Image (cartoon, rainbow, N blue to C red; front, side, top):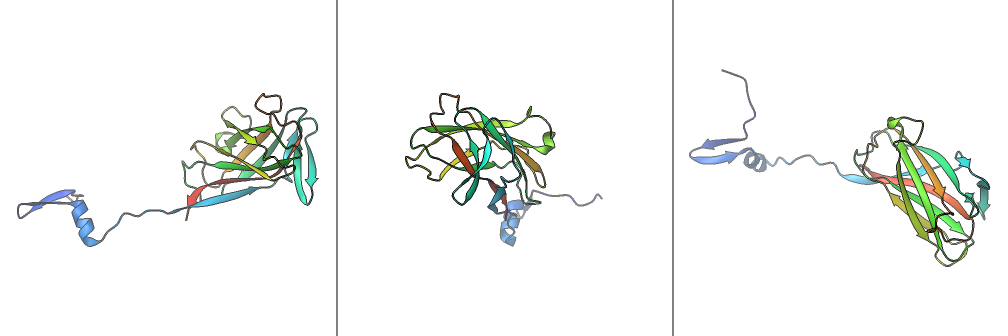
Length: 192
């Protein structure tokens, strides 16, 4: 005689019984993990700034980084994914808090995002997305732009590199004014 095996179905007294019936009768339910939204703040004080006139600038009591209208510039930051919290295959979303003295037009943001598991240097395998964000018509009003990235290989305890740029030379960027990045954070689903 052999050992035990997992039997998915059987027949007792001429009636077919399946494993699912047994589990249901015993009150056995499949284990499900609930999800919650993880929010990862990205500190701008350690950002690498690149481009002419890209500079740290305060807007009232809010420290920020100016991305000029005159030429392209970018901000490069790193965020660490929470340890043991992330669910592989979820969609990360970058939230960009910004403002401008301009009262009309659109700002075009281009973002490269790359988990360090793909190699730290270069952007060859980075995911790039862009978003157009409308100015709300009031000077210096706080605006939010969001960019959702496709599910990827983002995992736990992992460094994620983010490069945020403004592309004022692009015809879709019609904001005729400098803008200030006031905050960045990344959200995605995680374990509860």
